[in-house]
Image 1 (tube, helix red, strand yellow):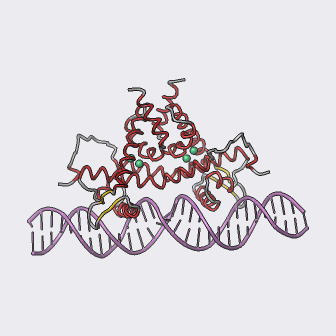
Image 2: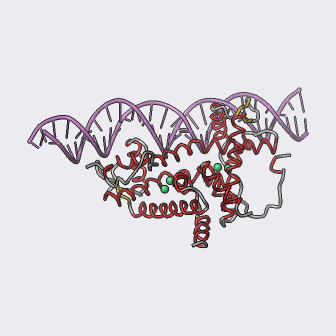
Image 3: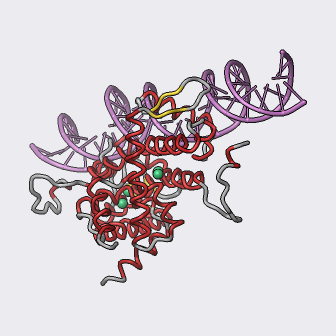
Length: 149
Length: 149
DNA sequence: ACAGAAATGTAGCCGATGCTATATTTCAAA
DNA sequence: TTTGAAATATAGCATCGGCTACATTTCTGT
Ligand SMILES: [Mn+2]
Ligand SMILES: [Mn+2]
Ligand SMILES: [Mn+2]
Ligand SMILES: [Mn+2]
């Protein structure tokens, strides 16, 4: 008797397994860093006209070699461009990601605050939560926030 | 003129910086895997009396060498114990983490559903979100859920 | 009791993401 | 214009968390 035989339940065609959920979370984890970088580069570009490696590193709380290496990956993925010893800029794809992430970030913060989370904690937790909020959940957040003025 | 001089604002003694938030998220990211493992090992132990590597791997959607290596790290951190070719068991510390994580998991799912997220999406997203919900936010979720019966 | 199947373990590869230490380049002050 | 400081780049190290391939041990059916 194998374990799959235990507690079979009346499962139909499609069913979300534990593995599906964990696999989904792993996939998201691998893109979360890019999301944070693009969002940050967009912010810095708006503030200063460009995103310098030093500023990226300081805002993220990492050393500049770490930021530099991450930017190399961003460039490799077509999300950013830069010339040696100069600022980093987003490509259209990178800018699109930044817009999408920023919208998600703000919505998550708003939702958290709406259900009673103190703003400081909302901002703190949102930095991690934002990456795991699906399109479906995002819509639900919007609907919830709309339905209260 | 350095950039710290720009937009200084009337900041007082303690202020949460962007770096603080990202550093917090990175710290959590490094413990999230342990949280999933301990929660899962607790589940399997309850269901089957022990947690076998094969079952852990299948539920997580990874290969068994991956699960095996993770369990080695769990043991190194004092969260689990096991003998060769035998099941994995949580230490008291591991069991405590499992209880804490499971409570957080359930509360996040309940909150998401309460604000209108479809149960399927709530379960999916919670697998990632759960790790980033602070104690403060957790309390707020509880208060919110209490105040609606 | 044994053989084959299943489970577990180990070796070794890879990329991501952090770090320190050390070049190299650019910027800014004298 | 020079030169020291700041910024950037690169080299090299470590750990984590995935994988495949292969070895070993345990379990199971005959
Ligand atoms: Mn983030
Ligand atoms: Mn963000
Ligand atoms: Mn999880
Ligand atoms: Mn969970």
